[in-house]
Length: 123
Image (tube, rainbow, N blue to C red; front, side, top):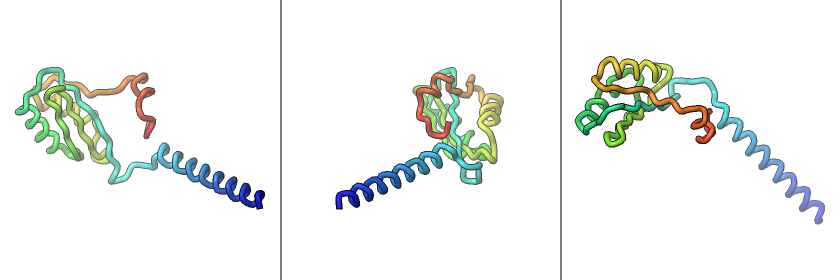
């Protein structure tokens, strides 16, 4: 009887470890991009931003092809947006942003050290 309980417990434990391993693999190894894939990017504006500027930036970004969501923090002069990578790229959006709008800005790219200390999801 005791052997049977130990065997069932060990089997259940092995099954749970296998399920967890499969889950971790699927989450950390994304498949190919499709029409529903979204990416996120950040623009750091290197000058003060008012609420009127934030509204103008938001409106401009929403007019860009492939942009899904836009958040502008006027106090920190940061713009965060999501986009569909099959329709556009973050580089193109930032390039058009600096060409079309009168703001000195650059795309935020984390350093290697910053990536190492961040969440490992989808790196």
